[in-house]
Length: 118
Image (cartoon, rainbow, N blue to C red):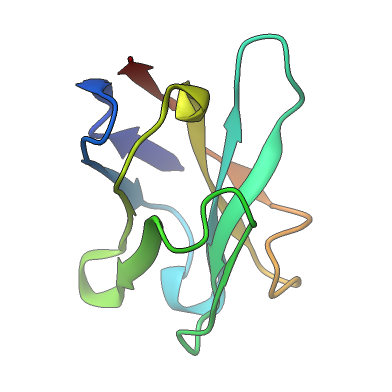
């Protein structure tokens, strides 16, 4: 199970930090990632961190968002900086056992809503 928190409303240029608490599986064995789905758009992968700490980002968020995790707390984080209205979306935490790029997640959270106003 994955449970996200930390979503909310911010103005353009603001920051948020999303958290994702995992339970029911061995967190250390999984790559952890974040997807998002904006209104009227397809869901997209935006960040992934492997069990060895290697990170990957999609181009729209590279340089603005930062993914990290705390294995002891079984918690992943997504720091969202320099937010733009186009970042408005439902953000999902995922866990992927076999794919280091989080492309085929085994677990999904229910999502955390981020609203960015201009």
